Length: 174
Image 1: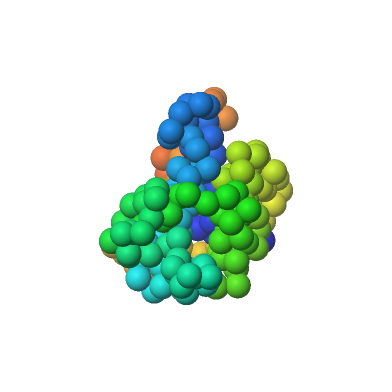
Image 2: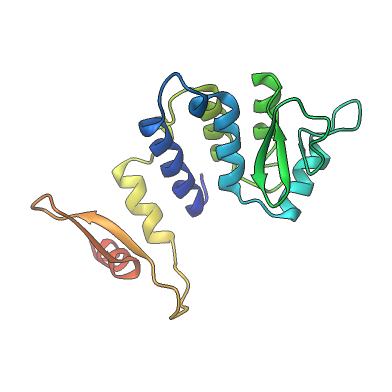
């Protein structure tokens, strides 16, 4: 099962599939891989794990702050780069190992592999019943400075934003 934040990542990947031109530089395996890595969050701790886990025979990693040797360096943020000049198999290996590194659930890693391959991610969306069950399990922080809202469709078909805890409570009462 995916972690709650991974459903947000799934939403971002689905939006990408919906919006990205089919035959452009914006919709390549490389661009998709960069999108997934950025979604996971670019911080040194995560990137160092990925860098160590992806070292090649020559001691270099396709995820590194050293882009001097890269043929197709792609900026990830915070000084980190992804070497795009690699096969789909190599890209999928990086994604497949995300759970082992504690960076993603197995389900999201599989979803990311499908996304980078250009395959549909629709099968990763939960059914309505599963979504209700998952939402009932989630708990938002009790921090008064954190206000989360969700967009919901009213019975009349309009979309409105309501406070997330209120929405979760409505679902729990159903």
